[in-house]
Each structure stands twice: as C-alpha cells, then as structure tokens.
Length: 97
Ligand SMILES: [Zn+2]
Ligand SMILES: [Zn+2]
Image 1 (cartoon, rainbow, N blue to C red):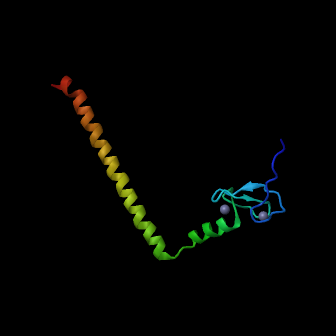
Image 2: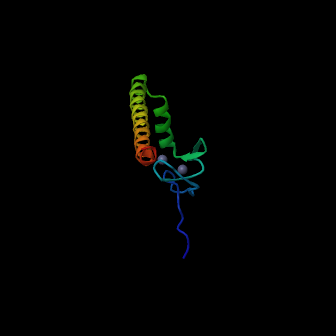
Image 3: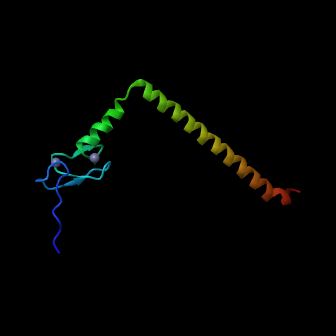
C-alpha cells in the first residue's frame, strides 16, 4: 500500500499541501492563501473578499437580518426568564403557602 499522490486541484503537476476550507479541494503551496490563518484556494478567497466589499444595499439586508436575529434572541431570553420564574413559583409555592 502506497499513498496516492495528491495533486493540486488547479495544477496537476504540483503536490497538494493544503485543503481549502470552503470547497475542500486540494491546493498547492502557490494556490493556498491564508486569511486569518485559514487555508482557502484562490477562487474561494476571491469570493470571500467580494463578500467583504459587498454593495451597501446588501449590507443593509444583513443589518435587517441581524436586527431580526437579535430580536429573536432577546425574545427567547425573555421567554426563558418567564419559564424559569414559572418553574420557581411552582417549586416554592408549597413552602410559601
Ligand atoms: Zn476553495
Ligand atoms: Zn496549485
């Protein structure tokens, strides 16, 4: 049993040194890009960076989604508090009564 030679997804003659975290393709030393210490192939990094420099309208969409998410989180936290209060009231009701 010998290990299969794994080559770069973009360069068939070069040995792969890393795996892209986004598309899981094998990439060689030249193709790998490290952004925040994470390996990405060049095409995935381009996509990643384009997401960063997205137009303002897209960011607004994300802002609304973020606000909705925060609202839901807050609502669920409030619900949890009510649930805990309810459970405590049941637990302590006999001793108080
Ligand atoms: Zn990739
Ligand atoms: Zn390559």
